[in-house]
Amino acid sequence: MKNILITGGAGFIGSHLVRRMVNRYPEYHIVNLDKLTYAGNLENLRDIEEASNYSFIKADICDAAAIHQVFEEHKINSVIHLAAESHVDRSIADPLAFVTTNVLGTAVLLNAAKHFWKDFQDVLFYHVSTDEVYGSLGEEGFFTEETAYDPRSPYSASKAGSDHLVRAWHHTYGMPVVISNCSNNYGSFQFPEKLLPLFISNIVNNKSLPVYGKGENIRDWLWVEDHCQAIDLIFHEAKPGSTYNIGGWNEWKNIDLIRLLCQIMDRKLGRTPGQSEGLITYIKDRPGHDLRYAIDAHKLENELGWKPSITFEEGLEKTVDWYLNNPEWVNRVTSGAYQQYYHQQYIERVQKP
Ligand code: NAD
Ligand code: DAU
Image (cartoon, rainbow, N blue to C red; front, side, top):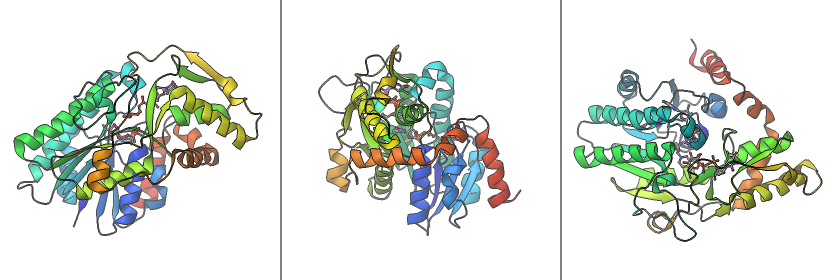
């Protein structure tokens, strides 16, 4: 019997992962633990919230007492850890929040796991991490699992710190752990502060599209459900102590991606070709802006047979359609205390006060 604690399950990637695990593995018990920050939203999981193999707990991963209680009550024997502060711009404005949740919170989880998993049999601590820990590439080359860490923003430094802690618990105490480092995800339920959902929403509302610097930075984009498929595979197949990079071999210069998005939006909204591009505004660059990320995903492909299931063109169309069909979701998650309001509704509907 697997009792899996998924942290950050109300966020963007976490909600896709929780849905996948609840639906695919009715024999597992999935415990979603989330603090419901501005980025966490239980409405993302409306379709599975009453499943008999699913529980939700509102808690902070830094709260050791709450975490111990969850391990004890639910007999947790696996952790898939996604809870984090995840937005680079916010990390520049408020780095301590990132150190607290990403570094301290990860240590609290590791310590609880070590406390409850006495002999480390049939247990796993899986940390979902980012390619940003490797730093910034020039025009050539790819990040492999052997690339030296060189994080450069408070966000990536805090994620690198949490990766190091996970490996330390493996080497020092023998805890079975796995880490994956993934490139930029896109898809439904992504909070509209990240590039794609922000720009989709701004185009709909005829607001300007703030491109940092000259728009020449390069990111490697992967559909969120393909990331979750990779996590599922790695969770079940990877050797303890291993690391996998996850990416879609799909590099885009920001400005080229933004122009493509503008063309799709003009078509979908019935606007004159070129109308959305007129909203592009070049603004001051993000401080310390990493030039290029690109993942070498050979290890995951060769060892575990993973490949992205859809092309970028298909994924982008699906994503744009989702945001166009769910404007009220965007309005709700960006309007203040909605997370707490929806949590209260959820308690009344599902958990009963
Ligand atoms: P997100 O910001 O959408 O969601 C983060 C979730 O964590 C939210 O539900 C939030 O409420 C929760 N959370 C934050 N602080 C918490 C705390 N102290 N205690 C409990 N819950 C807390 O993030 P995301 O984009 O879904 O990313 C999820 C994970 O994947 C992160 O660890 C991130 O570093 C990693 N990652 C993201 C990407 C990407 O492109 N988005 C790529 C690679 C790796
Ligand atoms: O590489 C994985 C990482 O990808 C994850 O670990 C992070 O959690 C995730 O947020 C993402 O980080 P980025 O900084 O790459 O994502 P963001 O969507 O913020 O920005 C993508 C690119 O677009 C980046 O080069 C900055 C640029 N940008 C972003 C915004 C929000 C703009 O030019 N204008 C904007 O308004």
